[in-house]
Length: 309
Length: 257
Ligand SMILES: Nc1ncnc2c1ncn2[C@@H]1O[C@H](COP(=O)(O)OP(=O)(O)OP(=O)(O)O)[C@@H](O)[C@H]1O
Ligand SMILES: [Mg+2]
Image (cartoon, rainbow over all chains, first blue to last red):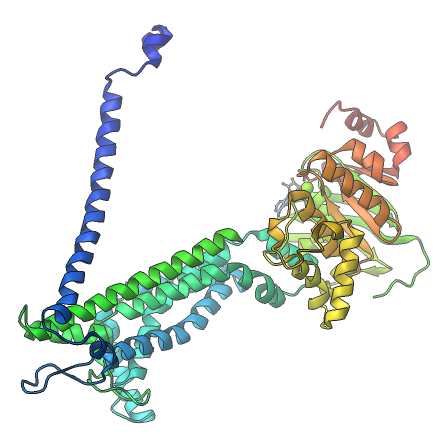
């Protein structure tokens, strides 16, 4: 140390080929490589899915309009095959929105409870519960749904039990931790001077929550809900175990149904690569990809609005 | 809780002690506050000025582990009584914070917040209150064309005046101000000081400041706090010309603190 300090300033301050700079360069290279791998993997998947997904229209000559709007799905019928995936698109959106409808109030309510009502003991109890819910694998959710929920619905609500409703409830529980965690972060990162300002004007705790805190956190709360919906939209296994997997359009919430993801997982095993049926599965995969881009765009839009506030 | 008594004292604090856990932050304070006067509180950092101010509207009550003893009479009623209605008290005793803290809402909604939570719904009535409050703080001309614009788009000085307007809109009797100008430039500071001068006609004001000139300029009475004790409370002219306590003199003349 001492010797170094005795060197003239010129020798100390000008960059030399020291080991420090080598380390700097190596570190830069490593992170650059990581970023490059991530980006190229994403691009590769997108291109692959894009080309594969479009083949059913370009190569197999299926009508794009029919694919999206027909409710008839019968790709294995040799004489008169039908390739309408509307019931599955509908099923995907139905379980996504309905599960968000259940999970959003619960999750945001839980977040408010943890941050505003009982920050000490409420958080101590709810936090581990939420973490536990995250850790349960989706096959277990499906299994519990299958053994508990499906018979319960069959007996008390009617129908087969395998239904949109079962899928919705299982998904709602699965996305609950996502929504709760992000909503909790959003609420607890609100500056304390908002609370003080409101209380000092004579507001009650409930008025403060409803009229100041929730509106202030709204963009983040919406982001929480959308991330939950993105998860619900893409979930396959647990839903497949309880939804019934029929190809018809459901006419009530108690009807069995199917989603894009469940049809893909069910059929990918017994279709041959390159066949028409296999290609239509890729097209459904492409729809899922486009939807997840849409979710990302929505979240981007919301977070840009958050910055403006 | 309406103002009925004829005495000039709006607050009468007797033997007030306050602890944050083990920390004895206010020690045996006796502090009468006169109606329609400006009382300034000075003293070194950590001496308990904010703590005392927050006792007057019981904002302290929300902090865990706080213990308060003694008597804080507002309009003859001891507000340390456990059954005190905080909503009602804070309607009468408004507060302005060190840093302007508007809600992330429109200018109009910020000012209308207090009246709305206290049950005023009629648009014409709200309009009237908002206009008047903004005029009172001399902000009306600057914002009248953009009442629906977000309040956070205003400058720091404008935000602080907006917060004063927000406090005035609930028609308080007392306005507590904790270093309201410490984050502002000299011109905005001057505007707020002029404002305090005008508000004195209608409101009782208690202001914390680290700026001696400000205390001397705006206040009728000045209180000097030191380490949780109220060392001296007298006419502002007296305290700055011939303080009774040598510690007050030392502080005012800048010999410590
Ligand atoms: N919430 C709290 N919990 C524990 N101690 C606190 C709390 N708030 C204040 N104190 C302590 O009480 C004492 C008085 O604090 P207070 O904020 O009233 O000082 P102040 O005179 O306003 O100082 P400043 O001029 O820096 O604002 C300080 O020692 C402070 O550390
Ligand atoms: Mg302070």
